[in-house]
Amino acid sequence: MSLQETDKQKVKVMLRTTIRNDGETESYELTTFGTKFSKGNALYLQYTEEDENGKTQTTVKYKDPEALIMRGGAVKMRQVFNPGETLNGHYESMYGSMPIQTKTESISHVWTEEKREGMFVFRYELFMQGDLLGQYEMAIAYKEEA
Image (cartoon, rainbow, N blue to C red; front, side, top):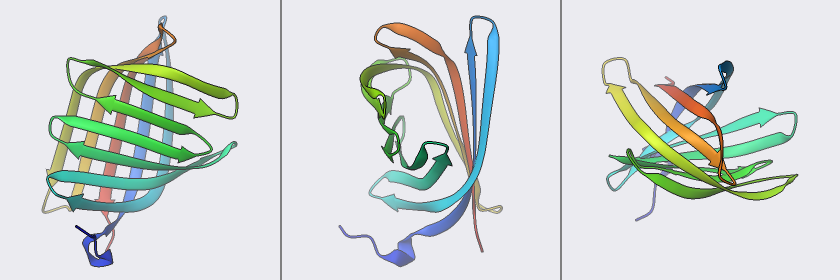
């Protein structure tokens, strides 16, 4: 099945990640633009993140109740989310490649048709080489552009 460009909808993406570890909390926010589209029963959201290390193309694939986040570019990462499960993935940067594990507490997705906007919220624990990096909450809000 091929996707036509008309099937893709431009969106504004607002990403907020909050990390809790050892009583400390860090938050990161990013606003960018991307596209959303459906293929089969899955919803896809694609956008580019940019930081001091360069650009990273991110794809979120959501097929209730699971999600997959793939990143390519300055950071290469594959994270699989399924509520109640701990799943393997990998993280690769200019410093090397390491296995990661994602223990998903919950995933929620809400779409508001009249406002043409949606939001994903991922709550999970992230482990690298067996060590807990923190408890994460990643909120990805997106709104269709006219």
